[in-house]
Length: 229
Ligand code: ATP
Image 1 (tube, rainbow, N blue to C red):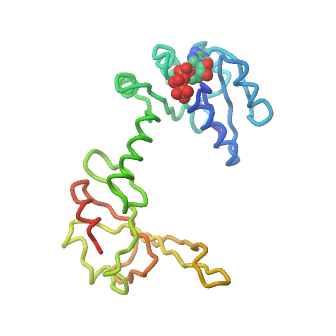
Image 2: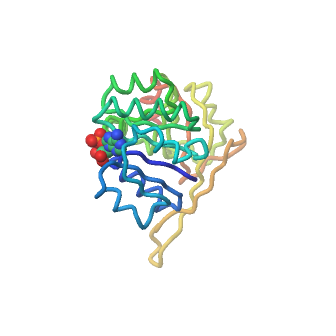
């Protein structure tokens, strides 16, 4: 993928680094020369400049990139200006970092495709982890629903989805099963799992001991799901 990251603060810097580590072509822009220098040997382009300058943005060719990330937080005016210019130029997909709820509201209002609040988003994930220790992962779907990952409870092992009838009993839908086959070390201990996804699972699919269930549920129902034993 080809991605531009504008603003190399803690968030933009880490994001650009991770994308490069994973083999993507990244263009970075920051007005701070020292930060840009860190990317000189690894980014496709490392540009020192003010991103509120529209000609600089045009030179990135945002209409040809898979995504442009605007990671300027403190200077809300600059962030909004850059976003509007990118939209005018025809950037295909814009992700913008918001400093606070007000900033996020403005970015959403002007039609930015995805708005992130890194501190808030990661605090939410940690709070979720504390409140729902049994969940391996959670993705919010709108306001009221989530897709959660949960280890298959013992009472499900050996039973088919049809027999379990979770949809009728709990009003949840198992949309996929992550089948994990254990790999053992020489002392017979599990050293890891080989995984494959069964999606969507057939009603005749039997649940096995190490399966992880991927479940679509209302947020109200999550506590109930966590009580599965
Ligand atoms: P983080 O929390 O991720 O560290 P932040 O929101 O505190 O980020 P900011 O100070 O807003 O960080 O800016 C992030 C980066 O964006 C900084 O390195 C800054 O130099 C750069 N930056 C800010 N405005 C512009 C601009 N107009 N053009 C280019 N770079 C900019």
